[in-house]
Image (cartoon, rainbow, N blue to C red; front, side, top):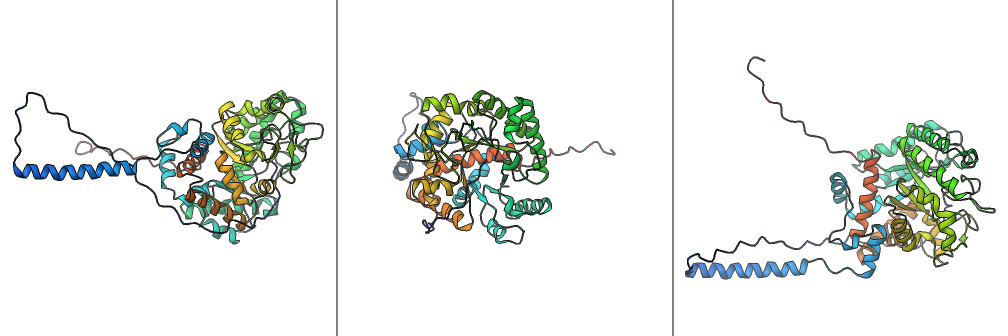
Length: 452
């Protein structure tokens, strides 16, 4: 994964209040009708009075049911739900097929905590006493990203990852994802650890090697406290592409086989693999993390050249990262990371992806759109992103959180839309052992016969 350069935003400074929650409508259990041959009932005065009172109560309850009934969803709300989970807009209370543990954990989170779960932020600092950890106690981030600027040796690195988990446990937060870029070779935070550089592995034409390298890398990273790798790159190289030194090659089918094997290796090593950069940025005019890059291919060319690797892992990859490049195949103006036709249409509906959709660095997205990072974050969630990578420090993190909260308050985003992404993220964490399982109750022991 290629992480974006730091860009600062100056807008979206106002913090909104949390919106009040609404009550669900009432359900009534109506009595069974009396049999037709029952003797006639002649009510007395007291019965008539009680009956009138009951009618008033029922009428008021019926009015409350009408007032509390779920309103008709707007087209914008339907599009948002369909982008994140096709078919969700047809459900009265949209939910994913997740475990009861996940559903309960999502329901326990307040709106600010749910928004924080959607954010993957840079860890600013090198030591446990740095201000980042004091902020972490108040912000239940979904994940943190570490880079070479955070440490000078492996002991210091392990101290940081350990502190992230300690703070989360003490603050009673869901354990965060702890991510680094480790696609191989010079593009890795630990260049001396596996995997080998992707071009070197791709040249061998051996998917088994890609799998074993990824598995070895996963074991090495887990020993250092990492549970998520921003790897592998599924981009297909081109003659002048920006990622030629970071990809498995320029043949789509070979890249597909290598990426599929690498994802399997990361999974067997119990580390989340975040596959980038959908729908393919190998033919971009530049590195989207550092410049306004364009991919000039048609949709037909994307399908034959760039999509095969993503199609190969659509059923197995836990996370797919959306590119910051602009695509002529779509509107030719907006980065892919804010286009619902990319996430909801192409990735989820056509390829059938059901994992976590991650927006690449929003500090690289915002300048392309000419907006602040908070506005870019709202656009990415509206388009179907579950996890937002926000590089930079406290300033950028707070802008994104406030913008998302304000969007929910104003109705641009709904609570049910946020909740779907939270469920998907918590399901991912449950699968990789980051969500505690409820303790099993031990059956009561029966007393044995006397004297035993």
